[in-house]
Amino acid sequence: MNSKWPTVKLGEVLRRSEDTIEPITDTEYREITVRLWGKGVVERRRAVGAALSGRRFVAHTGQFIASRIDARNGAMGLVPASLDGALVTNDFPLFNLNTARLESAFLGWICRMSGFVELCLRASEGTTNRVRLKEDRFLALEVPLPQIAEQRRIVAKIEELAAKIQEARNLREQAMDESKDLQMILAAQTLDRLTEDYPVRTLAEVVTIRGGGTPAKADPSYWSGSIPWITPKDMKRRELSDAIDHISELATRNTAAKQIAPNAVLVVVRGMILVHTFPSAVLRASAAINQDMKALIPTDELLPEYLCAAFWAYNSRLLALVEKSSHDTRKLETDKLLGSTIAVPPIPHQRRIIAELGALEAKAQTLKRFQTATAAELDALLPSVLSNAFAGEL
Image (cartoon, rainbow, N blue to C red; front, side, top):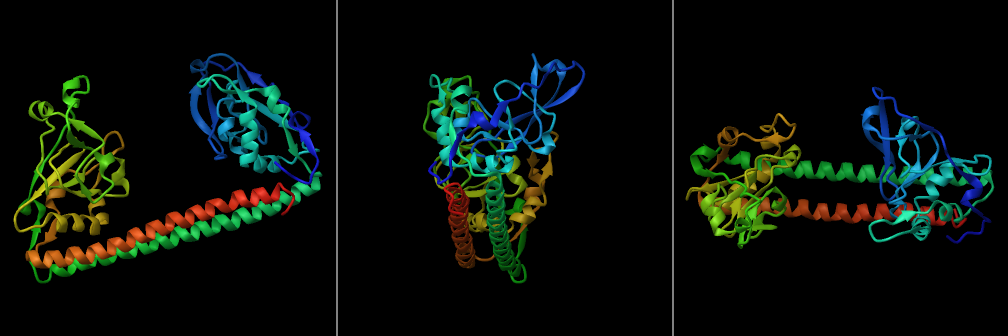
């Protein structure tokens, strides 16, 4: 961490907090933890004293906290006012700041720098699975420290620039969301216009539906084959011919995970992904599915690619049919799925619609890639700001 400022040892401005309590059996307490890579100090859980063993350290607003295990991965920060009085174990040492010499926000920003995290890595030692931050070595680390007035000036400048970066991030996300919504509206309108000239059918009239299952995990003979076993975690593409997991022919004979022939349309009907997306994909190779999915086998009057494209266009309408289960997950009941409708034009016209919707979806994917690229650029701005700030160049 090169800087034009003089350096001080952390032990000169930080002092270990020894404020502890013995939890009372029937009293509820909050416990806190620290997220990796400077993502903040957060509540871990709430528990009564009977569930907590031994004494606990009491956290106070503005204290510096680090994870002994993960300080080398950026798990450190300042205790926010919202978590004042929460408890931590000795795995999360707390430090009081000498605020006459060290502005708390200054430390809060400097500990998010990769150079500071690297210092914490050097101050950690142990075997592969037992690497721990060594407190004496941590407090012996030297960091650049200007006068308190300069610290405050730098903090104000960093926070000003960080706010502008966040504003740019919010505007980008808003623009991308609005563009995506517009494309979905255009896609749905393309299909809606077909209802004026062509018959409208329920899915129950134009598909056969198949379910799936999970072979017993305890039987290795079920999991030694080469048949793709598709689950929601595989539903990341519009065409599927393989899966993360595979099962045997014995499993397809003895369990509910039967083989499904190519050209079925696979959909997810249960899971938290249904909060925001109704995944669908055309199956291109024989496979089995689990119980969180359904396979829709179209009749000859319906192309699977057309049905899959319609599911993409009608994503929001299908999500409106989704219900919460007793465990707060999401589920689309089979009767509601089969009761949804679709216009069925002649096959040549379906092919034209597939091309139109494919062009719209390609634009959506292009925007998604652009969003990822611009997000990475924005994410790189703050580290650059911090690097300049703590080099004394801001």
